Length: 348
Length: 226
Image 1: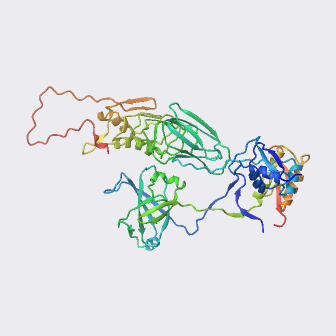
Image 2 (image 1 turned 90 degrees about the vertical axis):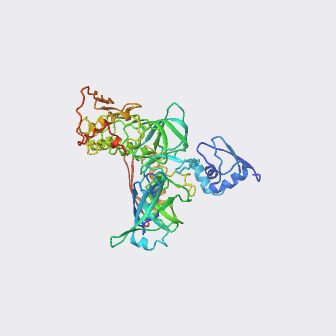
Image 3 (image 1 turned 90 degrees about the horizontal axis):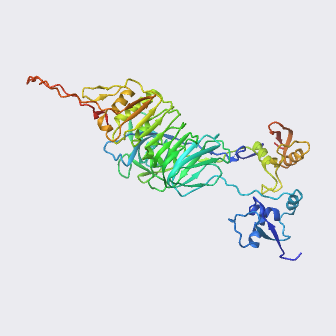
């Protein structure tokens, strides 16, 4: 054989440089000869099926291994696998924790900007440019894991519509404020503790689920539609939330709220305390106040759909001025205080 | 002595990791509401209860472990360190930088980090706060270690999964069980391959059984010199 004679090796599917070196020389140390014989190669080169590489013919490092591989018809092709962990320089915006048994996840998103998604498996980071029309993204996880899976959303984006119904999540965390206008979380069983970090949220659908804590919803002051039909909420939690809507009404928009659980109490004007402020004792009294306070219904009316019954803003007619002259009070008597029609005294 | 190695979840192919809890005291954290007279728009306020011992050696102490749960507040966090003495008295440690009882928590580089962002440092909410001047720097509070333990079971699994050519250090090693999918012992050469590979790895197969319904291979293996 002539010295420095060169052989030609054709790469097959799934082979990387180490596989080729092992197949030719019997050891991955042969990679040095490959790099010398093919100046265009580097450690970062991704080989493709059909690539032809030069090698020093007759140069073997482990003759026995070459002989065994040849005898058994084995062509090393371990390939290159995507293995978690992945990194990005973009800010992490949201994190979903999924049960280990979840095999796939689905989002539907529209808005502006671009999201980079780490699916929490061995797949590469996925880029999703957002547009005005919702894009539905379905991903099947490519590995099995013993603990919960974490799906992360990175990037600088804002959402117009987001539907996370197709993702079974144990918890959802937002790390910084996220602009999202319409959010659908049907069948969502995770805590709602992330909601205070949503911005501009005017429609929230939380249907057919079970909610143990509605306190985070109090901070969603821009809501105009809240659909909780088919959702199981303990009555006490519902009452506390409705009373909180009244007590923390400042800066809140009027909202259409749909419920299939009835708050406690009777739909009537609440009692007043000695200072003539309302004292709310039940959820239905809070509903009454929200649908009767004139100042809170100026822009748009509060509207409750509760178990098929509608409760909408209705102005209370002021009493007609009495045509009969009132008898003059005796000067020494204090006049009775006249309660205001509706009191903002409840509002923090 | 049975063989030992760094433990790996053989079914998932993932390293087993363990937290080192030795000598660590995790302090309690309480998120406070609005504090009158303070900047409640920029900061959230919290309190960390530390031991009397920590309070006594505070001038030298440089770090403490604390668990802070996820909270959706996009505000920086200021904490005060509350010492409960054995006599039942309570006092707060003084920040020598400004002589107040408040410490601002910053990220590991000393930059601003908000309470809602803490989950990006440690998803479980376990943190190490390290004193730096008048601030506390936030680090993940979990020490990752690789435990070492009995490795016979994982060696079996990896030997079965490995195909010749896939282990670069030992290119001819491996049963390559996937090549025998839906096979049996009689006419595929699997029995010979199993015995040869396990023998080379100093293991003895006492019994092997293949469930024809599930395709599951059950092996009873012992170490030759174990």
